Image 1: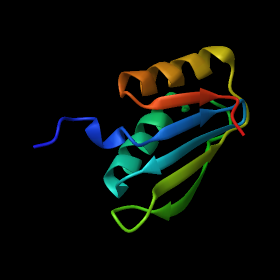
Image 2: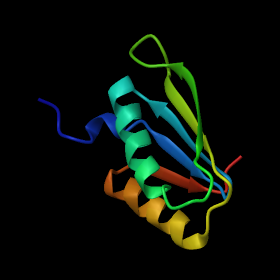
Image 3: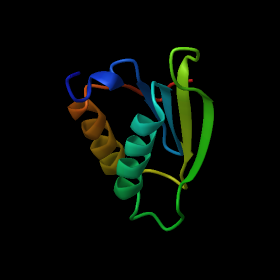
Length: 97
């Protein structure tokens, strides 16, 4: 059995003030878990986030990409999201292109 969280080793996250981009999610289940957890972290915003899914999971694809559009994130929210991904051992980039 694989170690929990190991499936997220290939995931990269870009954090920006109005958008979060998760790249290279290997499975649909991992994407669902990340989206659910992020929805709970972003729940306090006035406007609910908008999710865009791209790509293909599994060995035939390069993984799912999820773009999450938000009205705006403060520095404390960006820090909380960064810590969440660091706990999951996911590489986080801030203000990426």
